[in-house]
Image (cartoon, rainbow, N blue to C red; front, side, top):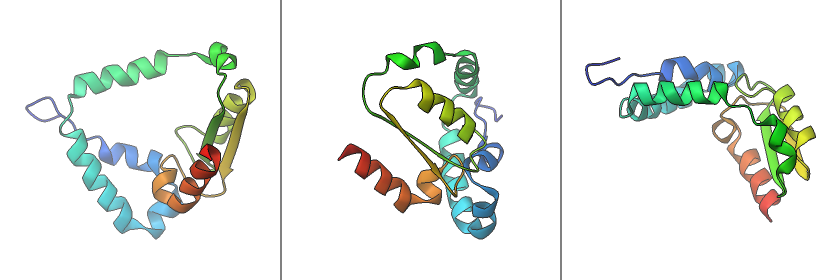
Length: 127
């Protein structure tokens, strides 16, 4: 944390965002995204971010998922450590009229790792 209460969590989140293979095969892309995230993180208040993380951890609405009445697209990569395929399967089983896509490659940052596949899936879903 710097003097203004800002902290750079980019190095910590990079393994959660990208699969090992993507980090190994595209170090320049990972570094570029890390640089952009660092700029973003250093402009936010770390106390507020810490509270957001705590709220996310303590927030459980699984018992209400069945109430979602609109078509829902649920996507993950097989290497997503933040919201792994098992968690997304659980969401899919509880949300009526949901569609589940588990990409053969990718971590949590699918839109960076497999942007064409990600965009194609979203466009097909909303069409």
